[in-house]
Image (cartoon, rainbow, N blue to C red; front, side):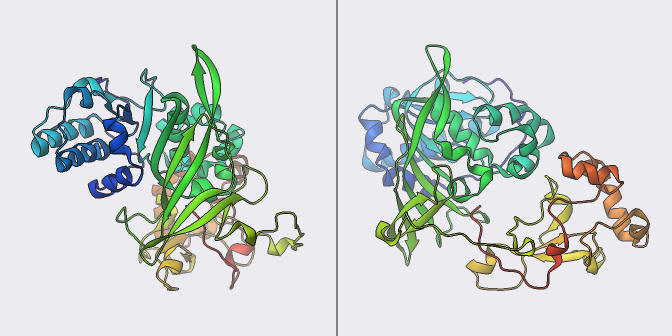
Length: 428
């Protein structure tokens, strides 16, 4: 087992562990077990506690298939947290009486550390967390890799809107580009925002990953073959993000439409997915491709007041401004309900999250220091978070900070306080 201790060995960044039964579901859905029996080399590049390899071994035991050293040599785990790998080996020994070979376990950061192996099949569940919410030190470490993979056009956009790019997009590009054998395939659970998100994930939808050929950097095409979107089933308890299971084909140019299945009344309803216009655009999903007249276009004219907006951006400080419960210790007039996906899922208008906005409703301008002084609890709360708030980056935000308003947020104006809004459900 390669056990070099990573700089993140004690951090659980964006981890959404896969329950064993849902690891088995993915394996059975895509017939991965039989591919393994037929000689395929399989790797989970962000293995966590090893749910997918463990599920493979459980299926083998259920089917009466002998777990041989040769078969074990074709299962590989890569994981950044060494304790997760230790737990995996303990679980395999306890549940199956098998000593999993340490030669097939690598304690590595799949993004920043080179891995020599190449595999027929990649399987797994990469971490789900936006770039803007990563720990500061790790954010600086992986920023060059986001840029190399074309996930953001430049550093400035990374610090603004594209800071919402999910690290899952980076993990997938790295894995598909560097770990797959030629014409290999990948099967992953992942957030649907990679397909439906706006500009933050357009760089993922160029369907090209950085690889290497004969030691020289190159680019490899990949395509999304099939997607299963979960709408009712709770695969991951406590996760508010929309998610799916997708098959990726290596060394294949993306073609549309994509076979897309949505969960409906306990069954999988067949749909087709394709981009709005350009290949990197967000997808739309239709029952039948004949529903679309792709040659028809029309222009929608909007006044400045009607311009669609993404909503408030805390620039990586959600933990300071956003609350699961309305805090009684802060002035009520600066606390506002947030629209979250529960509005659609539970058909309720009751808020599930609250946001602190130390702003004037009428002007959309942040409170000045003298005004904050009038609210002792607000002043104390913001002062406790002063260091992290002042460390945020971004041209527009920094200009507000230079005026002394280090508690300002991005994308806040009079529109944020409108008494009524037209809203629609976001993916991600």
